Image (cartoon, rainbow, N blue to C red):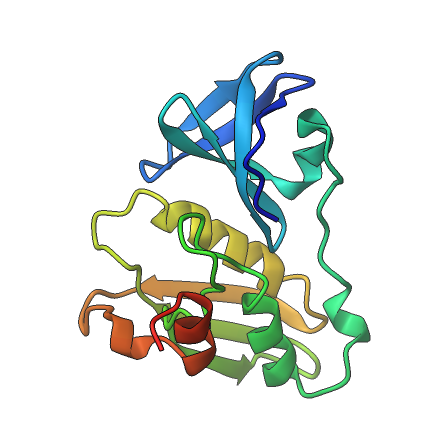
Length: 179
């Protein structure tokens, strides 16, 4: 979803300033332009800044509340479900999910007990100074913990090797017009 026409914020809502990651208050009555609605968040442009609004707060923008489908109803292995769940996380500035963007280097599943698993993710960011890192890490942890059997999630942010466009999937490159 990309809109060119400004919409008015209906009720005051917390948002995240991109790329600093700082929490700000988006006031009712403010005019914003929605630049993307992917995963379960909106990115809006307001007063020269980009803000990320949680999908659960879509009603504050007069839009639908964004929710992801229940991953536990999906067929497939635990590992398949984890990768699909990570594909519902999007870079707030680039309209591509973090898996196709090439930010996730590794996802390991370690058994802890009979039906309990620890998930270890090694990932990077498009830029080492990106303040959205903790926001993305929290979102990924939250989403992975929604998968049945996952009781512990550890995410390690690394910057070696650094991210570059070559890490993107062909799907991502096509989406961004790089192929």
